Image (cartoon, rainbow, N blue to C red; front, side):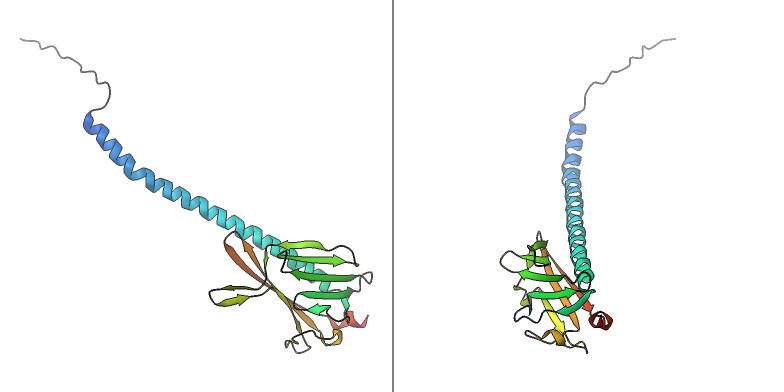
Length: 189
């Protein structure tokens, strides 16, 4: 009986074919994975911008509603009621509020009691045309029937205010509208 000596072959490293196969596989997978990762990160960033924009707009709308719900009278001074300006007096402490949409600084400002105007929102789009549609942040005054009063109405004609504004965040454009009807009981207090 012959005994053959069995030798164990020790392998160190890769063969040329294994190396080429690994490189081809990596060349196919890496761009796909990086594309998926880049798209996911972009979606996360756009979602965060949208959420922050909605939070800022919600804050501005809530503050506007809180103030306008307490209105006893609108200012009768000429020019205090315009598409970019709203002035009224609240029944809480008989304080005068003024909201101004400032196209030059692209902000919405408000003041209380004749004090300095503070910035309520930034990057507010004024008169802007996108794809042949014009967008204008503005106050629209409504009569008792909900019809637009147009121009600069008198204080006694105003029974509701529609507040529309557009925000530009990054390359995204967001639209918000708030409608506040004045409670007749507040006017009679």
